[in-house]
Image 1 (cartoon, rainbow, N blue to C red):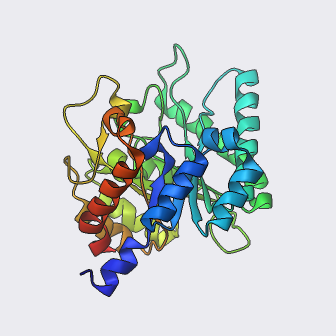
Image 2 (cartoon, rainbow, N blue to C red):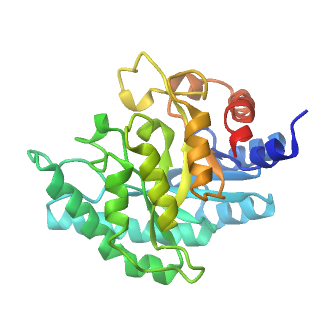
Image 3 (cartoon, helix red, strand yellow):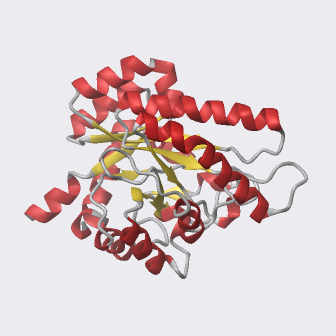
Length: 291
C-alpha cells in the first residue's frame, strides 16, 4: 500500500499524448479516466484533428487537467517569410493553449538553417522570436516554456541544448502573467538534460527564478534507435537517475504535474491501455516516492 505522500505524488502523473502517439484525444481522455490519471499533456496536431473547442470541452467534462500543450517554437529561420510564418503559427498555438486552459506552451527552438553553422546566432534568433511573442502570450495569459534538447538534436531540432542556455534566454524577460508567473519559463525533461554536469545548479537556479513550468520524464535507452528521436524508454529501462533529478526539481519548488513523454516505436505499437498501465506502474515506483 502506498503512503499518503506517494499517493499525492502519483496524483501528479500526466500522460503526454506523444507516449500513446496513435491514440486520438477522446481515446487518451478515456484511457486516463479509466486509469485514474488526472492530467494529460496535449499535442496541437491531435487537438486540431478532433477540434479545439471539442477538445477543451471533452477534457473539462472528464474532470482532467491539461498539463501542457506541445508544441510551439521552430522559429530559427533566417528567411523573413519563413520567420513570419513560424511566428503566426506560434500565435495560433498561444490561442490554443489559452482555449485549453493549458498552464504552458512548450517551445522547441528549432535547428540550424540550411548551410548555417552559427549556433550562437541561431539561439539569438530564437530569443528574438520569443521576444516577439511575449506581448501576445502575456495578453492571452499563456506561459511560454523553453525546452532544452539533448545536444544530438542541436543541428536539426533544438539549438538550445542545456537548461542553463534556456534560463539565459528566459531571464532576459521580466514580464509576468496576471497570476504572477513569468511569461517565459523552462521545461526540465529528464531525457534531454540528465547528462548535464551542471544540471543540479541550473535546476536550483530555475527554482530561485520561479521558472520551472513543466517537468517531463522518460528514460535514455540504449542502443539508440536509427532515428535517435525515438530512443526514449519507460522509466527504469535506461540510464537516468529519476530519484535524484526528481528530488532536485521538487526542492526547487516545482508543484505542477509531471508528464511522462516517450517517443519509441515499439511502445507506440503496443496497446495504449497497456502502455498507460506500464507508465503508471513505473511512475509509482521511480518518480512518485520522491515528489
